[in-house]
Image 1 (spheres, rainbow, N blue to C red):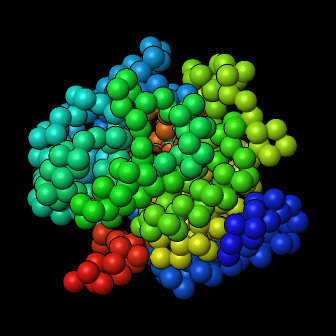
Image 2 (image 1 turned 60 degrees about the vertical axis):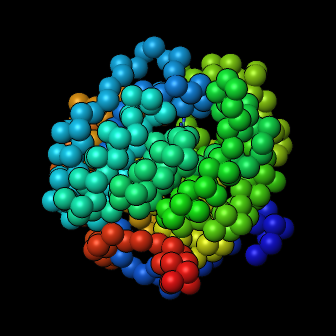
Length: 353
Ligand code: 5AD
């Protein structure tokens, strides 16, 4: 599939043709990663953030969000709960929080990986190479950091660099891969200013980067962000603007599966948020093979408001677990057992050894 083919699919409006894309993505998913849906227990460990991203509700200037950082004990307890639910992995996510110190985090990683026995995924933003190395040595298996958009001008506009630095997520991804992490990235779909052309490039980047995990979600306007408050500063791409609709999201998800057959691709919470009850299941039937049930204690969930109306934000971890497991079974799919490494990562490891 070349760029012209991708562009044609992104512009496709005929429901029957689109149905063919969903079926192709579903078949490729079944053939390359199987019927199992792997569950990752998501722990949102801190909503402190030093960045000023124009899309994200927990950006540093938003004084309306109460800030929290979970204690070591709370995080470990959430990880134990994830293990009790049978999840093979925990994902620890946070804003870019300097209060998450390297050694404190490394100790938590060690406990979860070696005492509790779960695979560990980190999603803690742009940190130093020394930190990435320390956490990998402590047992972290995977790291997630989305490049958000491959349009460099748009990226700079929505994701200002910190003073004296340049935010280069492609360089970070290469670094993570060279350290031995199973590496994930992805984009938002429908960011004001995102054109069909750059979205097609984003999809090609997934292939070029050789990603093991691909996370895709719709851009959801948050009222306390620059993108929602100052739309005149963020011009749209006019007739080339990508809409942030569920249908467009499913197109990108299905194309990601066709282009990267062996990657792990989640049906994300953001999909469930815009596409309603059926959203998560539709994601799983159009290319996705992963779900990330939230195990963050209820008292913190609503404070991790990167976008409004987040699905599952009023449920306890037990309720989320029950709803997601029932949903997966109702689709005729099975629940994955074990860490659920991506086949692409396993193939690379085998090639190296
Ligand atoms: N809408 C959709 N996704 C968002 N993210 C952050 N803010 C929003 C928003 N308003 C996504 C970004 C980030 C991930 C953790 O959440 O892609 O990388």
